[in-house]
Image (tube, rainbow, N blue to C red):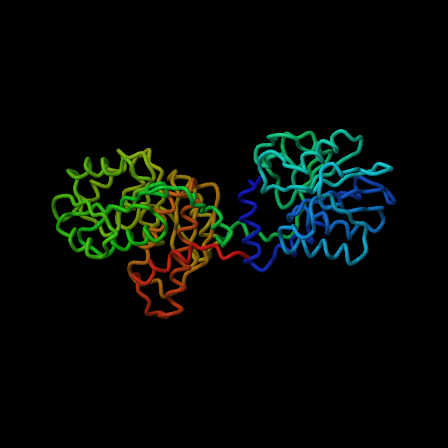
Length: 481
């Protein structure tokens, strides 16, 4: 099954793969026409009731395939208010072809006509609409329910939430539903025959991370400081650049506040990377167990912790990582040397681990050259770990043990040191904004690769990790289809 939110993402990803929504609408309309032919006889009167979005556009396409029926298409609203270009094009095609059409701009004007239709196609509202029906849709839904006429709904009965199956008010009581690509959770308990139509969305639209996934990012215009995520980066000691890169990347990925907990011996250097960083030093020149209580206290109110950049692999440091993870129950991105302790730690934390393939092997996982084989291995190991894995490579493989996503952005110039620290920071910021750890990790891989591609356009293989953070905001921008 697929939720309405995920379906919107898949539609957008399909367009990025070269299968535009216009082509999918043509396939959807053909599927609706097939459903009509299954529920009505040639010569029957068929009334197609269309909303002003793409759901209505699907039925407008279907009308062109119903030559053997007495079909009429009715638009709820004025043609100049049709919301999408492709739906408008299909309405114009009906009008220019002189096929029977009508409009309803006032709910009081809706009439099934005489004689009553033998079948009604409900294409008022689709899966992306929630809440109670407004006018004229509410009145039309009640009229359809009161009439003794079978109804075929397009994708979901209008007024029904595709994810829950519930209705906030009036809703069409459909006899049959033709839905697209995959079943929707809310259709399972409806008293209607449900058909899932394959409309040609390629499997890669679900597997490969693409621009559709950016729809998961939705910043409230009324939000206040801290509402969009606070991130704690724990790193530094042997290295100063790594935690600074991770922190800068987290800020550029939309986190409101980013704090860096680091040894006081390198605090001044890390602070020097940017005035936006809030540095919280702890004594000494490397992380050790006596610092864990302080770190747990700092992490308490954070939306995500990025643990590992630049920490090194001293025995005392790895002991501290184990102790922190054992006592932490929030969300954390674990990177670099800290990864090696994860398999042996019993933790209530929600971890996103970001190893490259060598680090994955050191964690006990297996890998393969072919990304499909690697995806299966990563999925199995993520299931064994009980955490989300983001395995870096030519194709990034992301899995929580159930679902697998694959990132294909990035370039060979990103083998330069530090790009993994940027990835950890971006993923940490997104982990504080997106409910699903898998989705946060997938978006992190996608954005990091896009930023690297933008840097490569300017610097070629001479790009540096420090070129990436400033390009993250554009990489996370949804540019539409």
